[in-house]
Image 1 (cartoon, protein in one colour):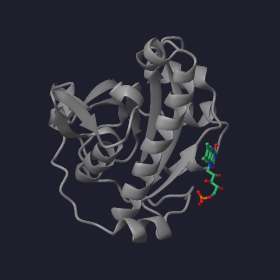
Image 2 (cartoon, rainbow, N blue to C red):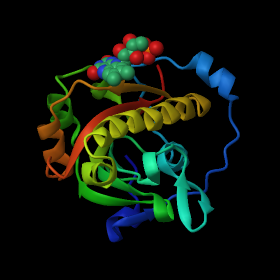
Image 3 (tube, rainbow, N blue to C red):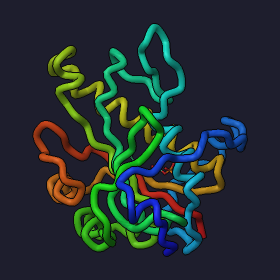
Image 4 (cartoon, rainbow, N blue to C red):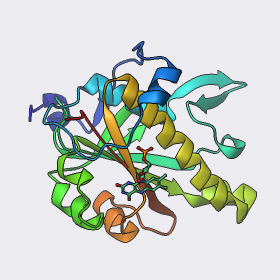
Length: 211
Ligand SMILES: Cc1cc2nc3c(=O)[nH]c(=O)nc-3n(C[C@H](O)[C@H](O)[C@H](O)COP(=O)(O)O)c2cc1C
């Protein structure tokens, strides 16, 4: 994997602009399929940028409120997006966190976490070759403080919106993906460094070029 002096010296990486004009939504819907085996071709940082922007990028500012690519009950945006970079050109292997406010990522920890993630996800084949593994977490209180128990339902609905945007964006970029609900939250939480109470992993998505 290529080393990037940016990730060696700084903890934040500014992502390139969202500009790609790919497939139509109709074509992307027709082509989307869950794919669980990926090639060794690395993702580019531009592809990672498009994926993250399509998930939770800030698309509009209305009356001072930053609105994002995916809908959110009360515009409270309870999801925080982490990812494991396994095979991305110009980005060191490690765990990263997406910051929508300046469309950048910060490194949480460096290293190869493929084996640990594989174990935390019941050794599912999709983790053997994914170039990028997105881990969606929720900060529950952001939504439950307004909506109470109903807020939990909203959070799980919202992560589905985000993952679907990402799945279609992947198809548009010529990439493949698979969403994963079967994993040990506590193990994944430990890997990314969240407490499992205030904030927990709730959904995972593997991404890469198809074979
Ligand atoms: C909530 C949810 C959880 C899922 N969990 C897994 C999983 O743990 N492992 C996996 O390989 N696929 C998982 N999938 C993907 C489904 O197996 C897949 O969507 C289904 O077989 C239909 O295929 P398609 O996505 O190609 O249409 C999950 C899908 C959803 C919506």
